[in-house]
Image (cartoon, rainbow, N blue to C red; front, side, top):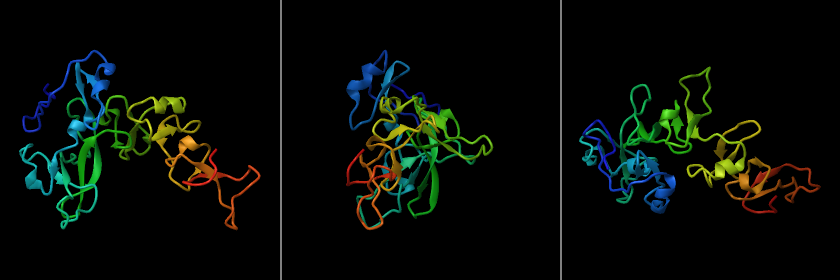
Length: 232
């Protein structure tokens, strides 16, 4: 299949199978990515995460349309420390969809460690300015109408935790923020207040330690996410 890219320097031809619905594509889900049925063909946004590189000149497939970026400060002494060839964001922070998958403008570092903004598939948590920055199945949530230039993040609406658990793009990394926020939000880190185990990244919502180093008792002390202790 062709990804439909109008820029010949960015176009991809991908091996795939035909489909009628997302269920037809589930058998392809693997380390290669999560697949959905898009325009009658099984496709994955993982195909647009870029090829490996060390510096910009390694990004040869896209004929100068992409740059080499890192999600961390590059270790030049480590030959295994590679970046990714991605399309730079527009001057206004815009990113065009690729292959039918929205892309958001994400902060990276260039090979020298300088900040560099580049477009990345709009998975859960990726910054966005509109729904079009997110992959199918996600919307751009958390936008503040009074600050139109401040990005939100790609997520899904929810009416309870099962909705977040049932979305292939938010499962195992989110819970529903109701009653205050009707969106799937990230699982809580250790030390954050919690109500139940399933809301914690560690899977444990425990009684807060008391001032003397013990555990607060009586069932009235607030609970926090933690790796040890008695869960909810």
